Length: 281
Image (cartoon, rainbow, N blue to C red; front, side):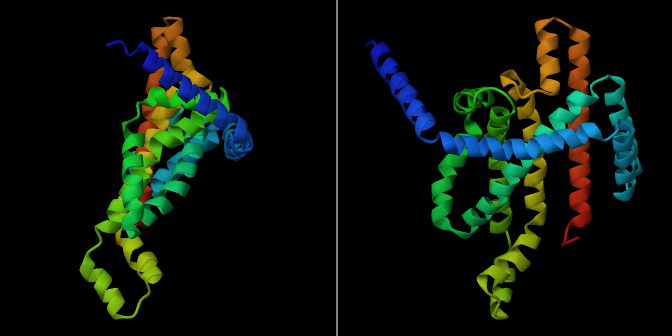
């Protein structure tokens, strides 16, 4: 049985739908673009304006302040390596993209995860949506992002947000659901309202799970930002794609090592910060 005509009709229907959405909701996409650029452009400018040596010093001091000598040494040596490889500017562009995507993802994801944990109806609605978001291949996300936003920073950040947001949503909801019922009952026995129990009992006890979501959101954002360089997001991904196209193995390895260093530094610092500010510690 030939399904060619049917497949073409489905593809045509999708094209018509996306064209309709693009035409009717252009103002919405412009607003989203303005928000993303309003966050990313100042971050990029600030990170490139601050001298590299000052960033390295701040990382070392931050490592000591977190109470870990190895973290201070890792931060200093890792950033010094990035500077020595002449990839500082590209690394700062990538870092700003990661921060932009992660901030927006967390600003939406943590409240949404809280809502899902507090409402069975919302949980039933968002569960299949989150399944869809997490099973969608990363490269496929680039297609609608490019169609609605063109090429450049904005579609890269949009695709990254879509890719990274499910984890903080799910880990926030999981942490809140795992709070012991006895603790909640104790709060209710003292006359605490539902909002009081949420903010002063549930959220502090779910802090570790929420921070795990924050950590994983940032790490997922970093991996997706590199892929998003294929549609003009820029940063270290550009260096990797350029080295592949030119068969410059050495330069590609250098850029890859810088991505790994950034990932390790982000992971170690976010974990240590979460341990220091944990209200249950």
